[in-house]
Image (cartoon, rainbow, N blue to C red; front, top):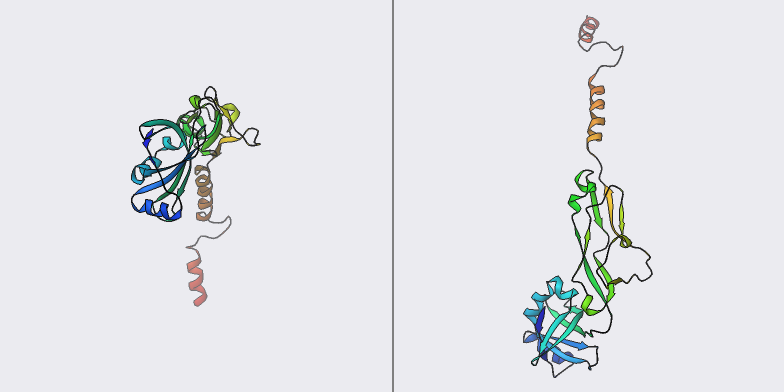
Length: 224
């Protein structure tokens, strides 16, 4: 994705507030060989870009003063209750330096699995994004995980998923995290089957008991 940025001359709380009042969002670009640089962006264009998953997880092309550079979105500061982006941070990308990045995980074909289609289970997504390490050229937009082989009671671990070439997971001490788990739902049919005999037992008269109609003449005789 591409976006346009402009050089920002002034900094400070007051300057940033005045900038926001004009429909611009203050930001900064850092990293790489260059010095940190103050920038500003059109707020509405940035707001719509932030709604796209690609803007958060892929290398972006920033155009500024006629030059284009590759950056990554690193931080977004939102207003506590207004739909307002208060500040954004970008990091320059060096093609020869590995980077750590969180990549979204897309789960597909769960409805085709035995667990969902025939065993009526529920698939719980434990992890929605995965932190990976790779060179910028190998950074995937997302990681796709095929769930068509799931069965009742299974759990899918990271070690069972083939990651894109050049991509390694950053686990932070976790050996082999669970990506998804399969949970069986409570079957309704056995419950209904158990309720039917109970209803029949209530309807049937107890063994050895006199019929209900036979009790009426006995009551009449007692009155006489």
